[in-house]
Length: 385
Image (cartoon, rainbow, N blue to C red; front, side, top):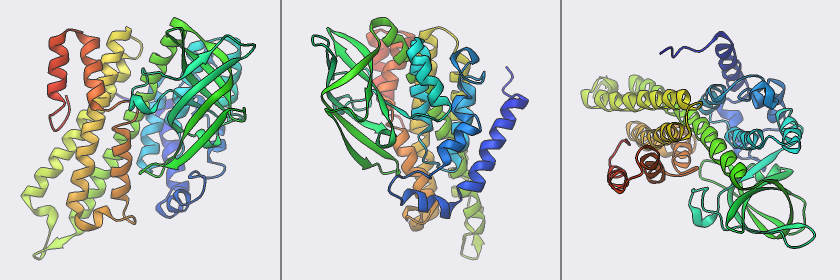
């Protein structure tokens, strides 16, 4: 298999890397995360102008002819700079609309790709704990207008979105709805996560909504879009892990104890080797998932969940070891290593934790009780599957 990027993909990666180096150095990032919005004014418009918001969409869907590879590549480079723009949430929203495929969805999708509108996907609920398949929000179709009642949690980019793509249940089936952020009956509870991202809970109290997709069409759209978003998250985790690894290596080369650089101590070299193994296994799992995106749903689901487990457990391992090797300063606000770990901690639980995806992997590959038992047992291991 050829794991090399094409010339166009290399150019895309270089453009993202240059942007991060120019616009997201450590002092600028500190100013951004301390601001009210948590994102830099003008950066999202720059993303649209550079074509990143449609890079992972096929041309027939209104994008620029790319795939999940482009999304993962962009997310990886954004992860290296710990960029706070909600790119992975954008991937989820655009893939939902692309999969729905109606004229109305295509119109909204075109506006999202151009950066003219912001739509936040709202699929998770408090009782789901990251499992988007648990939907308790109810849709009422009996009146003259559709109405939604329920709560959606951890909605990234929700505080500056003009609309929400909401999953809700009606007569036992999950549908997708579009809710205007300014509608009556829609209230937001914004807060900051430990990685300095801005999210919100959305409380819907008989809020007017518009139907986007129903039944099997909605179910297929959600499954495919979530897999695309998870792959992008794994790409972001890989970028963070790789940066944390080499940042730690550089620190060990200059930090001295007993008259010599601590990087010369064999026990610390072994730790660095373990960290590098986790980074490379995560890279391989991501490549495997990218290669499975156009295959059957079961194959794709298994590969994506396997990558998510490895990115979650491996990411936490690399982040924890990086802090340990830096010592006490590793947990300070001023050092970037603590921020790398915080973001990896959130990614490990975003769109399902390792336990959820171990079970999902088992169901996709086997589905037997024996496989489910094995997956639960392996969740106790230190480094994933």
